[in-house]
Amino acid sequence: MSQQDAFYTLLTPKNVGKVILVGAGPGDPDLLTVKAMRLIQQADVIIYDRLVSDEIIAIFPPHCQSIFVGKEAGNHCVPQQQINSLLVKHALAGKQVVRLKGGDPFIFGRGGEELEALLPFNIPFEVVPGITAASGCAAYAGIPLTHRDHAQSVQFITGHLKQGQDQIDWLSLARAKHTLVFYMGLNQSSVIRHKLSAYGMSLATPIAIVERGTTAQQRVLTGELAQLETLAKQAASPALIIIGSVTLLSQQLNWFSQLENTVINIEQPLQCYS
Ligand code: SAH
Image 1 (cartoon, rainbow, N blue to C red):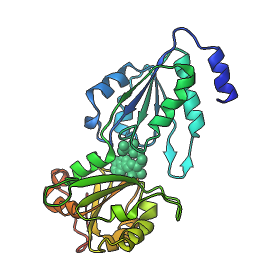
Image 2 (spheres, rainbow, N blue to C red):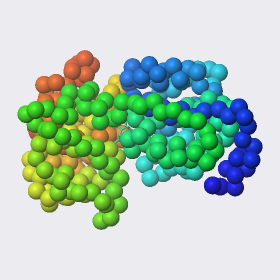
Image 3 (cartoon, rainbow, N blue to C red):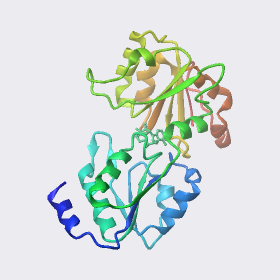
C-alpha cells in the first residue's frame, strides 16, 4: 500500500462509493451490454482506456467526470499504480466510479489487479463483462472460432511475450483442429510464426489479421502462416491474429465488409478487405 493509499484508508468515509469494472466491447457501440450502457449513464466518474472507442466516449453523460488513462503498447501513459489510486480516491470520495475497459475487463485487461487494489479499502465493486475482441472481431470478420469441420477448441493467447522467456506451451498450440487467437501479437509475429512452425504447424495454415474489428475502419487481412510477418507489417493496432482453417470461412461469411460494400483483393493468397 502506498503512503497516499494509507492516507485514504484513514479517511475512509461511511458513505464510500463503488467501483464498477465495465467491459466496453471491441468498438462498435451497439455491442455494449444494456447493463454497461445503464451504468455509464449513472456514473459520477468514468476512468477509461485507449481502446474505448470514440463512439462510446460520445455517450458519456455530460454530468460525469471522465478521466483518460490510455495506454499505448509498451508505453503506459498512466502507471497502473496511479490508475489504482484514482479508483480508490474517487470511490472513497463517495463516487460511483465506472472503470471502462476495451473488450472484456477480465481478458488481458488487468481487471483482476484493479479489483485487488480495492480490497484493502473495503470498497465495494461489481464487474460487467464485455464482448472480448476475439468474439467481436471473429463475428464481424465472418470467422466462426469453432466449427465442427475445422476446430473443436479455441485458445486466447497474449502476444506480449518476452523473447526467450515465454511460458507458452507451443507444442499444444501447434496441434490440429485448434483455433488460436493472439491478442497484442503484431510486434511478435516473427516469434509466433517461428515457434508454431518449429513445433509442427504447417506454414500453409490459413491465418487472418483483423484490424480495428467491429468498427467502420475494420480491415481483414488473410493469408498463410508463412506470410504472418508480411501481413503484420501491413496492419495497424489494435489488431488480432487468428490462426487456423476457420479463417478460410471469412471468404464467404464476411457479412460486415459486404455491408460496407468495399471488398478489396490485394493479391492471392494475401487478401485484405475493409
Ligand atoms: N480486454 C480486451 C483486450 C485488451 S488487450 C478484450 O477483451 O478485448 C489489447 C489487445 O486486444 C489489442 O492489442 C488487440 O490485439 C486486441 N483488440 C482489442 N480491440 C480490438 C479491435 N477492435 N480489433 C482488433 N483487435 C482488438
